[in-house]
Length: 434
Image 1 (cartoon, rainbow, N blue to C red):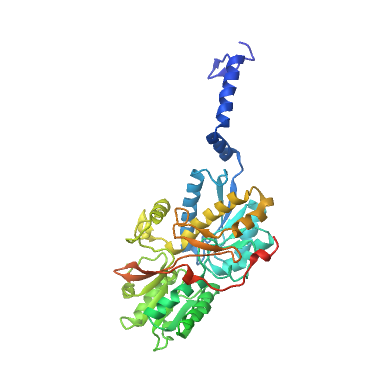
Image 2: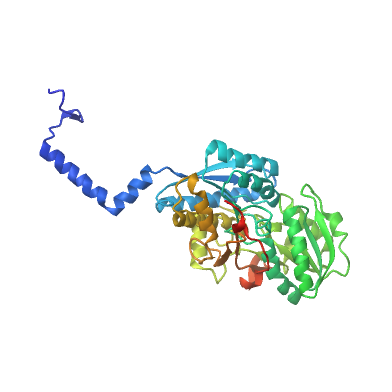
């Protein structure tokens, strides 16, 4: 056998000049087709590496689990559709323990060890505030999914964005007129004693006073607290509305103890769903919540007005019409927050493709591309609803929902306009150097 004759499957293959040219011609024709080019790019381009700063442990773990699930559902959808600018998305996850110091260390690790393109996903406000300065120093685009006012306030830096979820100031500004007009004007507030809670305290106080109301008492709860009855005893007797927003593993205890303290003789109660995210409203001890109200960013229950985009999103993430995992009806989603991960990933996709981002040298162009966005249309990429985006503040503004507890379910009774949540603010990150 001629040693220069190739073997295929153990048999001698006779490749003539004519057959070789014919094969090369077919390959060249295939390579010129658009479908092949997209396929080749997806297969050969370096992946777009996203650092996912996740609250896997600590008081944010309940949210972290669903942020993780939502993120991977969105990334699968993006990758199956060809990735971002022809590049597959690779998620690299690090647990920050819901701890500010560790958060900064995680950002450093993403930049120096993992060499990621961007970082996203941080929820708890004190972790955002502890991590964002390091992102700015490293010139690392940092996309948070937090709700805190820290981004729009101008307190952070040009590399930090919150494009997928509205901030507390916007939320409470849009809620206050409805609360004052329907529930009462003398309000006692119960909130966590850190930045997120302080945003509620400061901005709801201003918003309710603008409606002619007043604050009867401000009750700040330490994040390590495990029993709450002593705080309920401090609520003034002439309180018309209890406004509560709690987070973390103690939320169910908080709500149950509130019911035990007041029984049927209670003021009107308005809560942010944070107090019951990932908690089944049919849980024993929550019966007293019937007839009370909650803010929701994205309604947990798929009501009669469900959009086709919400239906699509639920299917891809694996959430049923009651806001629970399709695999376990007792596993309740953090539905009013986790959509922010989905929408943030699609914002990153939009900005990367608009800017032509390819490497760290293009981060300035990426930042400017995000800042140039003015709105997001409701759709599969933004299922929570349409939004405006303020490129100077790095913050989006959208619709909010007020829901009433009826028969252990949440039924939407009011939807705000985007305009209801707008406010004056002179923040302009675009003036900062890149």
